[in-house]
Amino acid sequence: MSKTLKDIVKEHVADPAVAGLALETVHRPLGGSSAAVSPPTYSRPEEDRSKAPYHAVSDGAFIPARDESGWYSAIRRNADGSPVLGPRVVLDSVGAQSGASETCLWHSQDRLGISLPALIVGGDSAPEDGAGLDAQVAAALGVEVSTWEAAHRHNDAWVKFAETMDGTPVWQDESSGSVKELITTTSARTGEQLYRYFPNAAVYGFWLSSGSAARHKMPRAYSSEIVGYGARAVKTGATKLDPVGGASEKSNVGFRNNELTTGPKGKKPSAAGFGQVPRTVYVTQYACELILQQASISLSVLRSIGFADPAVKQSALTTLTLLALTGHALAGEDGFLRTGCALVPVEQRFGWVSRGSATPEALEIESTDAVIEALRESVEETAGLGLALAEPIRLRYSAAERQLITERVEIERAKAFDGGE
Image 1 (cartoon, rainbow, N blue to C red):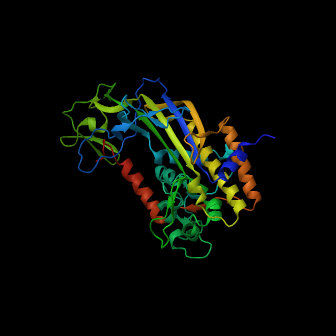
Image 2 (image 1 turned 45 degrees about the vertical axis):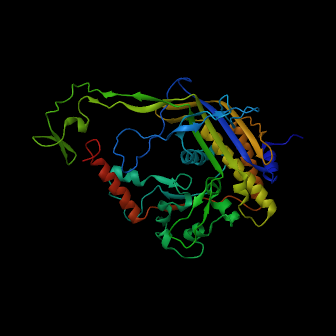
Image 3 (image 1 turned 90 degrees about the horizontal axis):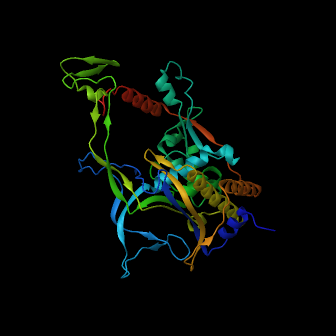
């Protein structure tokens, strides 16, 4: 009888010599290998006044090369054995990849056939003040966020400073069984609780850094990054055209009470979007010799989670490993990262990395649906051992959070000019 994917994963999870699972994908731009792609932009250091886009580029990086088994685990070298150095640019960071993976899991629950546990904030108005809101504020307050989408997962500020559906502030509720108690008592030492309520935190990491005497944290078990190697900078420019004919730069415009005004004082019409607006030529893209995604699922990290029963631990860690693998597969189905950066996977490899072996042991995966089926089987098996995933817990925005959202909407819609007024 052949082993299922779930059985294979469980067998390797139980083997202490297996350090983890390596996941490698070679990408090409949708427009072809020579097409330039747009990396994410980041904020510059405070002392840097440049307005040019700021990218995560390293000029003297090692360039990956294939080893004898076909993996990009070697370093390209010169004839004398010295490493070849070249520019690399980050196309999607570890944090962004992590967020994309767990968000895909949350939004694919129907496809997974699994109800995932979460703390969910928002999505409805407080009954005492939900009426009389204008449409934009009401829409903003209607947005809900789960702990699979929040930056700090179950320790996120939107969760800690929310309130329960009966109006009790989460972070002021010291009662037994409260949401605060659930957050502050969940750690790597309470594996059953971590798995039941916050499995994504077990996979993608968490840190309770403030607001509690406890300082629980856990590193990411899943890590992924997409990098362009041999990156060559490409400058681009653009001009915004005005089909109406534009407006003279000698004119002045203002904005008051949602109405455009003209007069002797104000700003140039281009600041409000009128007329033709040329843009400075910047480096905005990179043509890359190799675009490589290197990811891993660390079994060493997952094994650090404590459980009372060894059999439950083995089953739960199998589920968490498959959860990470499923998130990776789901996120990989959509190669669109941002405008100007649509990638297509052309090679994929999965392999178990063991201590004392330089070559990963190949893991054959037929499809994303095969991984989903294995995850579903593992969730059911773990539940059969008495550890089932919890139902989501709903919270609502507190008065202070509602005020923050309302003020943001009002400030944003008051902006009539580029960069605000």
